Structure formats: C-alpha cells, structure tokens
Length: 368
Image (cartoon, rainbow, N blue to C red; front, top):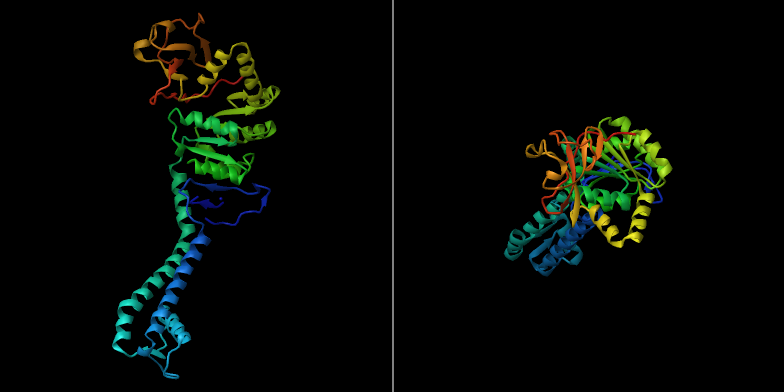
C-alpha cells in the first residue's frame, strides 16, 4: 500500500494475477467494513430519515399550508422534508397549526440534526482517512527498529517467524515482505506488518525499514530470487543477521557469497529428517520436537553466567550440546572447550516453558 493501510490511498499499479507491480505497506488492524459499504449504509440511513420525515408531515398535512395551492399531498410532504432536513427552508410550505409546529420542534428538528450528522460525518471520515493512515504509518516507521524482516510468507517463512515469536519476539517487531496481496492480507490478519512488492528491489526493502532491521529471514520460493534478495538486503544493511533458505544444496555457497550469515537447504534438511525417521522413528520425533519452539524440548542459546565461569561443560545444570566461542561453534566434547569463559554462549537442550527464550546473539554468524 506507496499507500498505507491503516492497513490510504495513493494510486497503485494494476495487478498481474495476484501479484502487484508496485509495493505498498499494510499495518495490522481490526477488520472493519469497506469504506464504500459504510457510505452506502449511511446514505440508506439518511434516506430512511427523509422518508420518515415525509410520512410524519403527510400524516399531519392538515396542519401545514402550501402557498401555491393551500393543500399538502405526499409529494409536497416529501419536498418539505427534503428542504427542511437539508436546512434549505424556502418557506413555501410552513407548519401553521400548533400540533405541526410542536412536531417540528420535537421531531423534525432532531431528525434534521441526525440527518446532518450522518452525511457530514461520512464526508469527514472519507476526507480524513488518508491523513490518519499516513500519520499511523509515520508513527510506525519512527518506532520501528531492531526488528525482523521476513521475505516470503509461505510455509517456510510462516514457520520461521512462528518459531522466533515463540521465543519472545513480539509481532509488532516483524515485517513481512511478499509480492502477493493475499499473502500480505493473511500476514496482517495474524498481527504482522506487511509490505506488498518484489523484495529484489531496494525500494521495497526500504519500505520494510531493512536498514534498521536486526535480522532478516529470506524464505522465497526460488533460489535465484533468494540470491538477489540477499544481495540487496546486505547492500542496505551491513550489520543485520541474514538467514536464507534454498531448495538446492548446490546454491548454498552462492547465498553465502551474496551475504547470508546462515543458509538452510530445505530439501536436504527434510530429506535428512526423513532418513533419520526411517532408521529410528523415535529419534525423528525427538528432532522434530527440538526444532518446534515452545513445545516439549527446545534448543536454547544463552550466555554463560558468572557462576559457571571456570567450570567444565558437564558441570553446568543444563544439558549443553555446543559452546559458541568467538566465531567458532565447539561440540560439548571438544577438548578446545576446556573451562567455560564469561564471553562464551551455550547451546543447551531445555524443557519448554512459558518463560523459555532464546537469547539473541547480536554478532553475525561466521561466513564460510
């Protein structure tokens, strides 16, 4: 949306299939009626008030005087209702009896005020909609920093961000980029901000505030797209942690050369899990449990606490599987680990609890 929905209304290019040629930003919001439907509903209410006023006048037609012929029929009553509710008031038809005047005071006048509120309120709402949307977008951009950008909201992207959010990341700190408007609608419905557009273009990524992002998840459907997105994202943000997924293992080195800190080969990873499940279904279940954050057992990365400094890996209370020291990831049984240091980070296996969180590492992963 550049058009913002408060997710209003700059011109956008025509759609090609379900993909948009240009880009726009959509912020999560409660589902409301479409503006056209709201206008039609309020016009119908105004028309109902007009008809009701005409019926009231026609029912008391003997109390009114028409300067042209002295009598008031239903058309005259409708005419009187129109000029009265619109505050035009030509004075050619006037209430002359006490009952008619009392009806005008206590019934027609409140209807006139309600009629104006409906029409003027609708007009003001339509005129101020874009201002409110732009104000909300500007406020969102000002507050957004150290966030996570997810490029591609298919199965991989959705699962990745659900895993990260399960460890404590707020949905307000996630921006989804995808060329499909339907996908972005689904993302905003889940509470994420969305940018519709081609993520290989720098202007689209800039709409997602990539320059201020802390981490970028690239989960596109095509490997060549992932390479271009990685190159563009790394050019815009030199310090962000970029994790990308590819289908073919042979493309992983190209992603790393493009600037990705970590590359996951989705096809081979799924294949390895399948093979492990064939050899040992129980082991396959354990591995699947480990990669699903928030349930069962979780893999948690945390810093070494002062009480653990100088101790061996097996002397800690947690089940440590690896030690991150500098840019090296050492196995728990690696002799190079020795005693734990205050600057080390531990990768442990822990029982998932509501308070379990993966403490993010601000350092980029080593590139090979």
